[in-house]
Image (cartoon, rainbow, N blue to C red; front, top):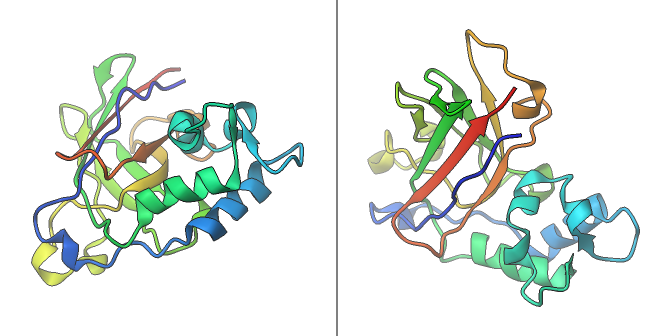
Length: 199
């Protein structure tokens, strides 16, 4: 399974504040997450249940401030408000993709928000260079004129899908991805996320 090495991000200082924040209602999204993941019907999400949504499983501690091992609706809603609140805009992300420890060039990397968050958070994608680095971005159509061409995306929860035009990568990295991360807008300086793909 791939290893998420790090995830941190900050709001971009390049005029991204002119872009509307993602319109995610924390309470509604929390209810949708619990409806989707709460298999035992106790009204909360356990660590085992969170495994069905890789980005939530990776960032579980950030949603569990009382450290009781269960995510209640109010805890989830509070964290989502930090990620998608009205003061949060776009950020830059650097994503490293390696295969068995070696840089994987030419890979397409897609950051896809979970469906239960609605459609206001847009998918971002990029292609790795010879060092295995990608700078995922929103489509240019979703950026204002003065930011077109800038590699910017929204913070938040993402499923990550990796494909390659010449290599057949396992489904656990794309169509049935086990990769995920949370891009946190509270940490300034941009995001650094890394995945090492295993057979």
